[in-house]
Length: 163
Image (cartoon, rainbow, N blue to C red; front, side, top):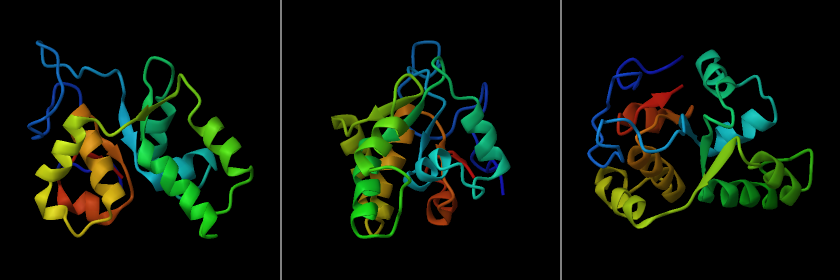
């Protein structure tokens, strides 16, 4: 596993997303280095060994000047997983979420009109989990890779992935 060579965006390389927010010189508008899938947020803050080497390297680049994006729906997903007993956290969910999303390392990404439109543009994903569609759309609109281990997302090639 690792950075998907079929779709990885790197310095000077652009992936095919038509709605990538960029400046006039072609660089991404956001200093954000990646968007995290929900399971990656959980694994990162719980220091899970399930993270791949490439995912760990990307997460290590995170600092105040290079924040990571977390979809607002991921916060709900984590709370819902705790509620039904599928995930156990070391802290109460409200405290865990507050620590996991503390600025300046993480930027919470809301569903904007551009992101909602991009979700609709992902027509082939209609049978996917709605949260996955939103997370993919956020990464596409921001023009940054998505850190995920979700094979369905990786295999779709709809977004640059780090896996």
